[in-house]
Length: 368
Image 1 (cartoon, rainbow, N blue to C red):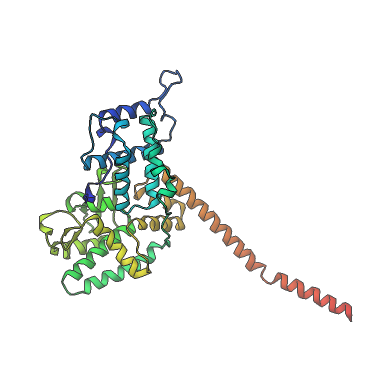
Image 2 (tube, rainbow, N blue to C red):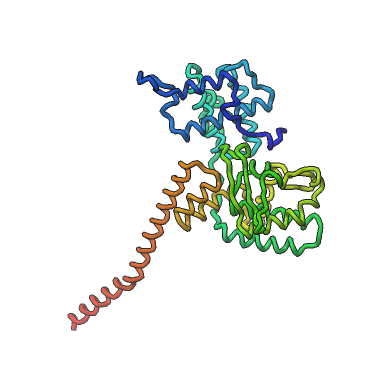
């Protein structure tokens, strides 16, 4: 099985020469006013970035499986057999059906730019079936939790860990608390969490709080993330680093931050931590990615500005940040409208009943 830490996206500057040249040609602009430009020159920057990242992921898969040949061009490299193998790996990684379908759409779009003379229908029609039929399923249903409410449970778990007798159960609890606190306040992606080390990603400041840094190679969109942790999350992380991490087997031989009983935590090990606790708390297991949705939704409920801040902290692009701001603004407009309606109903409560009673009294008076 492929080591999850090695899964990534090869950036365009490291693509094989033929692929780099094809991409540059597709993005060529109309510099001389002739009206001729590349097929991808009209695309939005966000769309091209998404296509490029997905193609880089496919190239990374080929490199990890010893199938990446520098002499091949995109037209020869992308075969039905290799796309099928990549699709199976993505399913084995546990990616949602919607994500896997979108990755195939992105790959198809990129290939139409790199090699427009080829028929790439097999990418988005596996077995000559639509993507919906070939990869059934939709987004997994989940309940949005307010991060403040979830943090109450993390605090309780933290107290239990500190009070526990020294041993593996105490170490695991303090590790879980530190990881959950980081997810609830900053929500880094799993790939970033797996790569975290004490020396390169953490800096302890003079006031006792931690500063977290993720270089571009450890983030999904290759954007550097740099942010401080608040006092509470820092205290939980400190308790893990000072009182638990060094006690795990093999901790002295590595600088990886997250440890398990068999060495550094793997991608699966890190995913299992929030799943185990959310199952115990809410009866439904959630992986780390749901914390990104919870953090964004919690921020949007408070103010549109906080929605933009949350998007920035999580490493979203400016376009996604603006989208989150617009959605949060719409949410707050709806909430304000609902408040006005509730106020009006309260002000006019009983008005219809009083009017009916008055009309009935007049009718009774007329009968007499």
